[in-house]
Length: 227
Image (cartoon, rainbow, N blue to C red; front, side):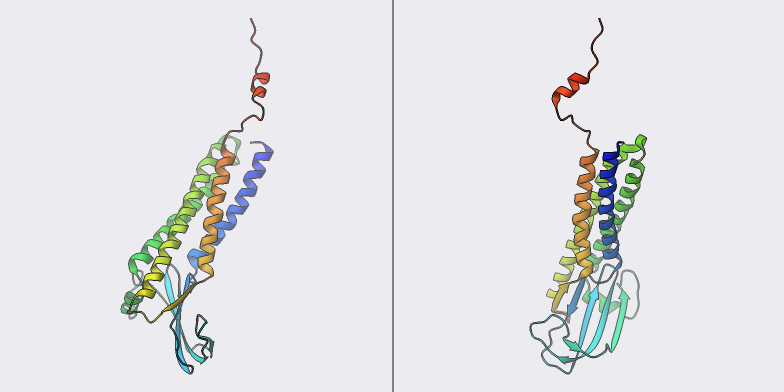
């Protein structure tokens, strides 16, 4: 592998590493979406929630002022109660019935499973890139690009599944939350998709055999025939 190609691979892999970090942060944090009820008056208790792929956290606060155009509890006192619980399909307990009403079990299982598959593709892609720096193993660069593309696609599918989960949860008549907005974990996952997908395509392009700039170069470089 020549120095120019090696430098391109290293630079691209550094960018892809940023996407890997963003994806891992998104998968492991609980701020994909923030849910809140609509408040009609001040001096009342507001219950907010935020959740990720694995658990849902709720916070009960005492509201001082209400801003009709805002999303959230407005100006609040110190939280009265803050509680995080894993979804029912991972643990069971006294909150099982609560989570059965406020979460969509099929959606959360699917999103979490797809995210785990994405992380697996990232690991395989990283291993292939590291192996491709060996001149005799540079053919690993092409599967590395494919693995990162698959990883990005899995992340964006997980994002879409979670988006549908939030929409279905808000539309449900049994939930207390009627307002929502997507938070920074959701943004990290979306950014990871863009970086991983584009990075994988770039690695695939780098892995392609180099074509001569001038068609005559091949003919001129060919050794003459000896009679």
